[in-house]
Image (cartoon, rainbow over all chains, first blue to last red):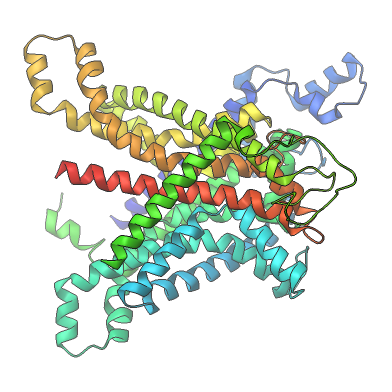
Amino acid sequence: MVFRRILARLAGMLVVVWGAATAAFLVLKLVPGDPVDVMLGVSAQASPELKQSIRAELGLDQPLLVQYVSYLSRLVRGDFGTSYQLRLPVTDVIGQQLGYTLQLAAASLAVALVIALVGAVVVHGRAARGIVSVLELLAISSPPFWIGLVLLSVFAFGLGWFPVAGADGIQGLLLPALTIALPVAGILGQVLRTGLEDAEQQPFATTARARGAGPARLVLRHTLRHAAIPALTLAGYIVGSLLGGAVIVESVFARPGLGRVALAAITNRDLPVVMGIIVFTAIVFVLVNLVVDLAYRAIDPRIGAPTVAIRGAR
Amino acid sequence: MRGRFAARAGLVVAALFLVAVTLMAVAPGLFTPLDPLATDTDRVLQPPGWGHPFGTDQTGRDMFARVVHGASYSLGVGAGATAAALVIGVVAGTLVGLAPRIVDGVAMRGVEILLAFPEFLIALFAIAVLGPGPVNVATAVGVAALPAYIRVARAETLVVRRSGYVEAARGLGVHPLRVAVSHVVPNTLRPLGVIATIGIGTTIVAAAGLSFLGLGPQDPTPEWGLLLSGGRNLLAQAWWVAFFPGVLITGTVVSATVVGRRLRRAGEGRRS
């Protein structure tokens, strides 16, 4: 039973990744422009014979279906193709830069969680909560590239506390992480606060209070668990913000990373890298969704096992 | 009581801000006589002051004029892409809502997946596929906005479709297409107007973000995102070049959100 459920789950994950890979393939095949021209660069003067031989080497002269099948079979073997521009395997291009972006994303998520929790849990009283909700609105509405520029201008150029560019150590990580974290914290804080306020009205909160739980114990043991469920629903959105934010922030702070790779690939029409990043993003989202589902079960014991018993076994 | 006063004051400020920015887009001449493209090598990187309230950039162009003239591009893309997404979303959402259950299920599954991502990321993927360029930026942010409209139009269609007056029209033998056009669609429009108001803000940020990355219009076009990226390299000497365009973007988005939320509350009040 459990085994079958895991199998169905894995099949679903594969379908999503396959769908993303197929969509990327189809759409990029429809794009006008000859990949060989992109490879050689705009200025290059190549004879038609040379272009034809390159095309044959890449299999671009084959029928679309043949190309698709060989593309999929290479994907399955972990071969994402070769970058037109860098002449490196796409997996290497992504692998080299992945660490920087993972570091940035993890730091951003940590900062966002801290800010959101402080805003939602620690702040009490109507007036203070009103101010926090205005700050959240500002954080959500400010474009991340502008937040980054303002932070740079004040803390790096103005006060000289942080380096202006690069990815060295904690010091180089803090401002970029804060840039991505602020809008995420705004959204997360809103959802957490609403969830906490809802939970405080529930009978179980009254019961806990009547049994002598103080405000801290009430939040930590009871209402925060309740508010975490709607916040978890945002996981996909947050990971998307971290990735989209990385593209912008790595450009603002001149950091290396996947975002820079993606931007260069988009600007230069380096299609294998673009496809590789799309498929890679799909894999990330599938894994995040899996983790979120497991986390749901851990946080809310009502989800999972009992449903079978209640509905009656098939 | 005091909270309500603050909320009302905020609403008025937001509405005035939107009116001002719209005027900038329609008639920039009202705000500044200066040419946003005119360079002046004698007045390079001037800090904000009387002659130049937002300062000047590295070629002596007046930043206030550039920001004011930039409104037409940024707002144009925001409003245009939102309007296009709204129209396509209503048509597609209504059709999906009236379609057989299998079509509905498959289409909504796709829409749900897209809705789980931030608009900026979808716009980025759309640009990755379409390639860079000012028109493609508008298309990309429009595509990114589309799923939300489809979902709401479809949900409203399902509600309206089961309502008494649609049943009555069908009973009277009115053609289904006519029922859809004259009864279903008009009733889905009000909630969509609310999302569209907030959506213009999101769309402007997404478009400015793509321009900031150099994927949209190119210098010397006075576009807000592009102005910011020009200011990135001048931060050490001239903070104002990157500061003021950002104030305008943020102000527009905050105002659109505040007005949109107010409209939503008004809509909810009328319903209950």
